[in-house]
Length: 73
Image (cartoon, rainbow, N blue to C red; front, side, top):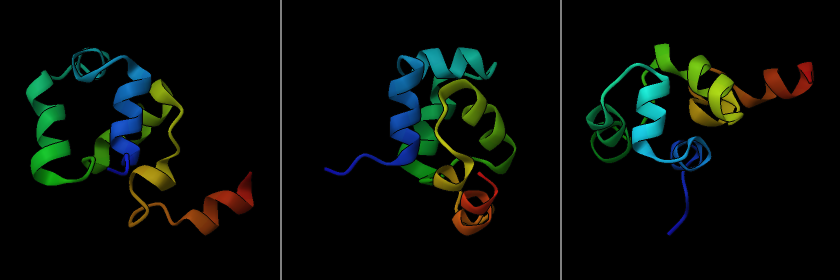
């Protein structure tokens, strides 16, 4: 199975519980984003990027188009 950017962020954070704690959320929120919502809430993209290093344009390309952020790098 292909790993999503959110799943990669979870792995880098040390698991769902660790990411939830870093975001001041419950583990159930992270689970829901992965299994139910299939995306990171917009307000959590930048914090997750800062915590894990997974780029915002990978976490939510619909909000942060990759072209804009790759040019700025």
